[in-house]
Length: 423
Image (cartoon, rainbow, N blue to C red; front, side):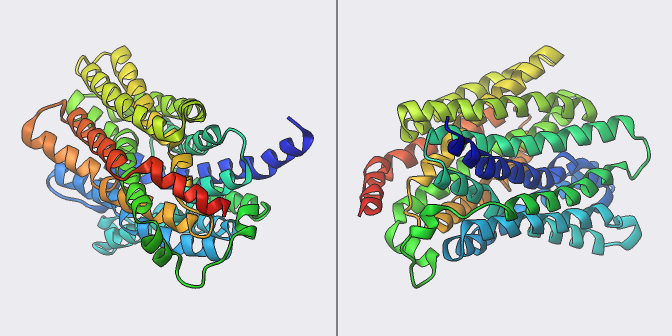
């Protein structure tokens, strides 16, 4: 690797990875503290109802994620990828700090859950512009091994999530005072400032600078000229939401409510799943460089089905070794899809509408399933007591994703986009 290539990687990829990790640290905190947030901000005589309140607060961020994708997508396509990413990471720190300072329901009544929901809505707004935008920014700069870059961007989110989980584990295990759970939120507000500084120093992409600007709204151009690609981006976000938030949020509940694992132990076990996810993202991203992004998406469907069944069957045995192994299998299944998904979506849209097309489509799908997966799985399990129901749910989602790939004509549509880019 030449000195210029090394300098480019340090100036573009590293700040992009760090900024993405910091933002997802903030976003994930509410997920790992679902039970505590439910208890403090949605009190009820029924513990299950309080738990659902915590899930509801966590899910609220998904409602505004598509709106955030449209907002930051517009900024990213009109004024630059750098501008969109710089402000998204800074704004993420504001609601994180508010949650850390927020009085409980016992202190201020209904105002507390209302403010909490407002904070999660703002976090969703920022995340809608961050996740896909960071990948677009990095991939437009760096052309070598794009699948690997895609996987590294995905893995950086897990670094943030793992950091949030580790901090939560330390706080809940070693700090005994009642308000200790607030400390990770204070840290989250601080790291947002670090992310802002890193992004501010980055340089704009050549593809954005050389693009042919459009006169109207990017979303109108997307719907008019890229309908199949947009539908595929929505489907991608939906499948991603089911996989990712089974691992990121639901498994902690599953461990404590149905396997009988203590809350602190559940957080510890989940770290193994998150690490497996983080490691497998660049591995499957690199595989996509070898076999094509399209084929990697087909492969991921099979891996997700197989790994989910193995994982949830192992959970039933209840031993430490089997729970950890099950978490690892679930993590691999999620990483097989999420790792190469950025480069797959990147190829669907030309530069003048890429940020809007990818981010808004993906976020709509994510809003549909990411915000409902934990609720649906929890409700179905309570009603049926079928402990393998989550594996069934994931399998059905994988089959639907395969159908989307088949009937939206991905290969042909990508070729058409590439012809437009060449022209």
